[in-house]
Length: 454
Image (tube, rainbow, N blue to C red):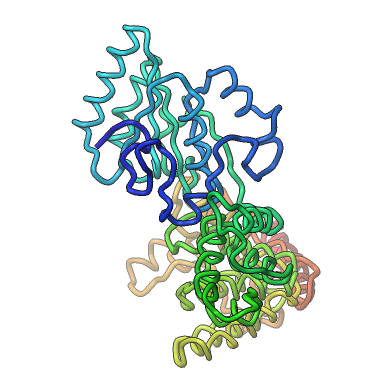
């Protein structure tokens, strides 16, 4: 469904101002850029947005940022300052038919000299077909599209539409920013809480940490806490013990299928790779405390043991597998300690990706080169016919030889001198390196000896 932007919201009175009983976060929503707390490059007087709004030349754009960072607030400010007609769309109830109807209406308005700005909150919820319906009207300039999303536009918007939108990254608010907003709300007698209670700096800072960069969450928590003690006997003071009692557990921002999921597992993997044991433990805790499947984490740690530790510490794989078995056996929360043990082990282990690169090179040759048969000498020869065809000819049993290698040609002819595994000198792999170099040299001598004429 569509309509003038925000004019159908339950929390707004006829004048467009928030109703007195609206949530504090809605009542305290900034009315212009001067009230917005954020980085100067985003909302400062010389920012792109400030200039575009002042000149009434806002282009099609999408605000990308976490919940409570101010995306809808910025859209409201654009709506209040632009001279264009402003419409809103719901990703839940709007189908292609409704979209095309509004787009055609906007096109008619443009021919009559009237601009239309269309606001789409949670634009990532529109499917590809719905997004495609916007495209010709954005291209022709019939509408200016203003979207807002918590998801990475690179993944959630189709390329053709995204290429025609300017992406405005709206970062999470800092704790200090949230404290500014909460103090403003507590003191405001018109829209805020009119200083019905007092609070010390520790309480504001606690709420700032609790809110995790989300202004809506900070103001909602503040309003709930004030409501809890507003009718208590004097003194009515907001304290950290009270806040801890009211909000015992911080709900962590996490989407097991969204970008945050991949960001955190990437942070864990790269902290392990960089041998930063403290960071690795932190990212592990972030994932597990937010509800990540511990077996997913365990699988990633098993992969890491081979990919990034490899033969520098062959025992790391066994440690990772034991951690997987432990968390599978006892579950959470007890199993978290087993994964922590794996994380510390992998963090502090010597690192080598020689195994990873060796297997990758072999796979590349499999896909890019002809699939030649094995050399005759190492083919199986269970029948007389196969033996007559030369299968197994010249094969020597390595265990019967003093050198424990016959120097056979085991790769196809086109790959005869290919070297995949190039061990490092890290940890126990130094011994593998010494052994690999010695064996390769020995095999070359044996092959050269066979090649010389008798």
